[in-house]
Image 1 (cartoon, helix red, strand yellow):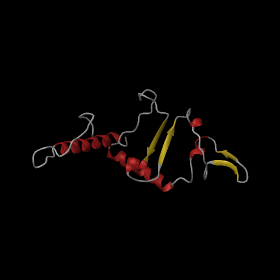
Image 2: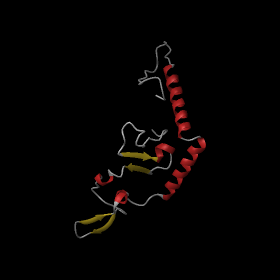
Image 3: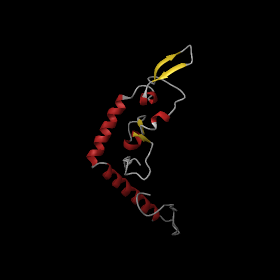
Image 4: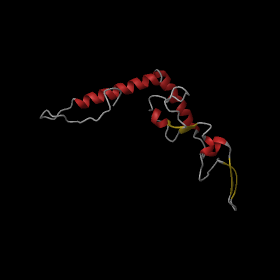
Length: 143
């Protein structure tokens, strides 16, 4: 969830993740096109790319089927990093810190979700029948 960082510690997660995808747009609302794939080091060699583009190869020969990919994570990073987007993400993290951190954002998002759920549950047609049918896994959280 964008309002609560995943617990990637060895003892914290019920199931340790091999990979976690992050979208800064979904966390901050800006910048678009910036994200990350956090990969466990032991899993990195298993990732195979079927193509290459700028910055991912050490050597390629156009007249032959010969390509040497860059080592490690560099072989997965296509193109040039958007440095303006990285700077915007740093401001986003600072903004979240000033709000009270991810626990405060998570609590606020849950409160907004509860408010919406309660407001929808109380909506009625003129006849008095419910205007909204909510499907939910329970009464906690935001939904």
